[in-house]
Length: 311
Image 1 (cartoon, rainbow, N blue to C red):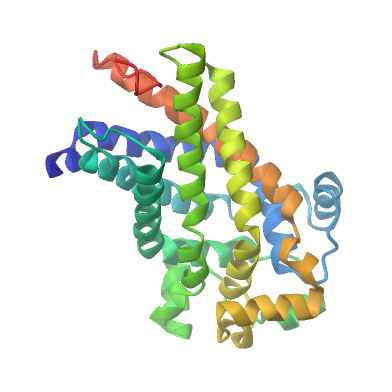
Image 2 (cartoon, helix red, strand yellow):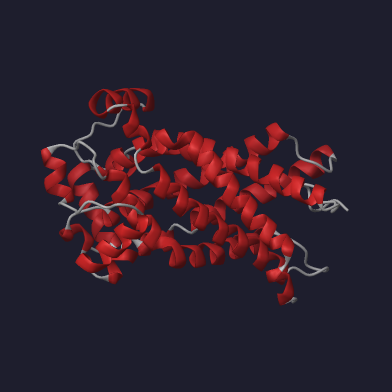
């Protein structure tokens, strides 16, 4: 085990590329994330298909509502992706040996550990982001009663300070339990992605995964992980932006509350735009990430193919 690899330039390049890829992809597909958030949080908003939901929101609040909260989301995502990609590639390099190499179980374990580190370090950013995204939304009276009132926030730092001041510092980590459970989402995603990428190289005997193939592999990996973990994401949204009563409930109790008030289908409200948004965003992110990594190492004169098993 060589811990020096954890602080290597290569690991840093992966982290920067992951952050840049995530920010680029989220910017392109942000309206889909807005629709997903509104469907998850607002009880009275009818679950329609994505196109109709976007049309309704534009008619009610204007086209700018689709991009409300973009800046704090990009800030949070940049930090989150940097931490995750750095931890994932750094830890995988550290525990990898010449004899054992890479395997799915090891990737799943490393991805889970990276996810836990990411959640602990960046949850306050996402809590603030959830508040900022809903700020100014023209929600119904019923939803206002459910969600409660919150002060106006000038930005991410201001939101963090006001939340901590009014609700206590621990509130910045509200929803962290389902978030910790949700580390299985990127863990599944990265494991499937790495496995499919390696399999592609073996099947086609190629030293490089094509652009379209990277996009499709990323889409498949994310769609599977999203469908499997979506109910936890619903619970997470309720814990981050809900009434004081909801915030005091445990994860299991929130599950029971959703089923009692909305039925089992309530656990999958907003699934269509979520799958569409996360699948397209993840696929585009992986594409940008791979291209940036390859280009940086090309500039440095380092041979760094997309198929790591090839020598």
